[in-house]
Figure 1: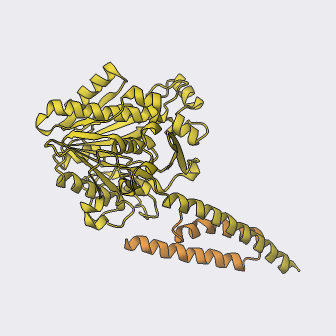
Figure 2 (figure 1 turned 180 degrees about the horizontal axis):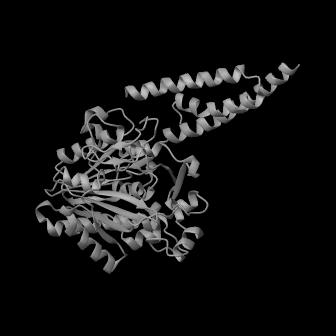
Figure 3 (figure 1 turned 120 degrees about the vertical axis):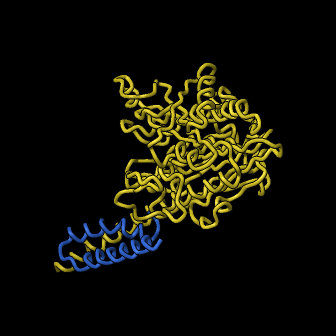
Length: 49
Length: 388
C-alpha cells in the first residue's frame, strides 16, 4: 500500500512537470505532445484508469 | 503576434484535451461504478461478504458477495468460484444462473459471482474490448460489466519486475501478480489478488468445503479447452463426469493438474487444504488472437470467420463452425457440468453428498437462452436483491 501511494505521488509529480513543460514550451508541436503524454498521468491520479 | 498565435494553438489544444479527458474519464468511471443486479433465488439462504472470512479484506474492491445456498440437511459443501477472469463472462453468468435458480436438497453450495471483482471494473480498450454487454431476458435486457483477465491497476499497483509466486518461489510473468488464477493459495500480506486468494482459502477452511469448482473460458488456440482440469484428489470425479457428459450430451475432456505449475486453483487449493479443486474451461472465440472485429456480438455469439479459418488450417485445439460458440451454449456447458459433478461426487462420497435441483437442462438452456433464467428484479422485494 505504501509503494502504491508513492507511485501516485510520483505520477502526480511527473504530471505537474509535463504540464509545466506544456506552459513553457515555445514549440507548439512539442506542447501538444506534452498534453498527449499527460493524459494517462491525469487519469491515473484522478483514479479513473 | 507570434506569441499570441502560439497561445491560441495551445489554448485550443488544451480545450480539446480537456474534452477528451472528461469523456474518457466519465466512461471509465461509469464502468467501474456500475452495479449488476442479482436476484436471490429460492435456494439462497444468506449473502455474506468475503471479508466475513478474512476481515482485512473489508472495504477493498475484492470484498465480493458470497452467496450461501444451504439445504439445512447434512451433506457436503461445494464452493463455486465465478469469474476469476472477468473477460470470460460465461463464468460469471453461470454463477449467477446458479444463484437465481439453484435449490440445494442435501449439503451446502457457496457461490462467488465475481471472485476477482477488481478485474471486472476494467477492460482492455487497447484490444477494443466493449465496456458492457447485455443479455436479452423475458423481462427486458440485462446489462453486465465486461472485465479483464487481471485486477484493475487502480487497486493493485505497481506490478513487480518479475512476479515471484508464494510460497513456491516459482517465477511468473510480472502482470500475473494481478491474475487471480496465479496467486493461489494466497498470501496474508501480499498483493490484492494474493490477499483475495488467502481470504478464499480461509472461506474453504472455515466452511469445511469438500470440493471447489473454478469457472473459466479459453481461446480455441489454447490447448486447455473444453475440459475439466482436476487435482489428483478429485480425478475420479472429473474422469467419470467427463465420460458421462461426453457419452450423453457434449464433448468435454479431463486433464490432470500439473504438479509443478504453481499459483493455479486446481493445483494449490487441493495442496493447501482438504478441498480438491476442479477447473472448467469452455470455448470463447472472443479471446483468440486471430479474431476479427472485437465487439459485443463476438463476445455473445462466438462466431468469427478468422477463427474458423484458423481452424481450417489446423491451428486450433477445439472445433468451430459457422454456428460459433454462443454464450448460451458456453453457460449451458458449465451449468450441466457442475450438476453432473455433484451427482458423481455424491456417488463417490455419499457421506458428503451434494444434491442439486432447480437447474435447467443443457437443451433447455441452449433453446431458451441464458437470459430466460435471470429473474426479474422488479418481481421480488428489495431484500431479495444483491448488487455486484
